[in-house]
Length: 293
Ligand code: ARG
Image (cartoon, rainbow, N blue to C red; front, side):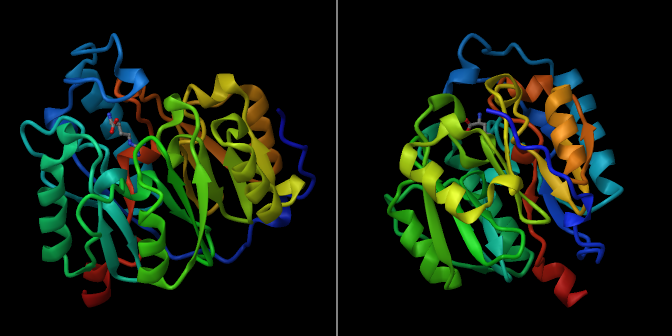
């Protein structure tokens, strides 16, 4: 499925949005130490921590030019903590922290919670037994008017109504049906200018219908499977810049036609754990710390 060519680069507003803030975590203890998604199969301890560090630092440097970065201390024994998108979801100073579906990641919960408390956020807890994997499975539209939330492989559908209540926002629930795309951010990204970058086959028909109803054809950038499995949808968008692991020429062209500049940062070592650019950051744009400083 190809994106329709988009004729007007003017779709992206010229007004500069506020410089976003991202929460990141150093890959000091990063490893593929267990298997909880299909990407990790056959990759146990196969990632190079040295190369991972180099790649992460490149991402950090790239983002530092366009965003503020906050760091959370890594925890020994939590090799996936580097994927801070799964720390929780923040909006308007309120954080809903994650409740991981896999026991392997549950020790991260308290580290992230502590960080949010110390940074001055209001922390709203989900009831125990309801799984929610943070920004990995919940992404606001760029104007904040709606919340796209994934469910199925990790996040419980039930969590969505709590998210809706927390921010008094309309939640659009999307059913993830391909285990390779087990988090929403692996196959869906909202981009400024009212665009969406996504892999349609990761969703059921009803979810595709919702996406199509919300985004007109010329604003939908559908990626091929080849791009999807290189985590092209796992993209970080700041103003007209899109940072991702890599994109085909065709996808790069579609994004450029829509007015974006594409920055590829190779993240091969993190792909072995099933993550790439977007998984490595959590958007804390309405940072409580920023507000008080
Ligand atoms: N190995 C991690 C897991 O399976 C990767 C998490 C990727 N994060 C994301 N936001 N998609 O949980």
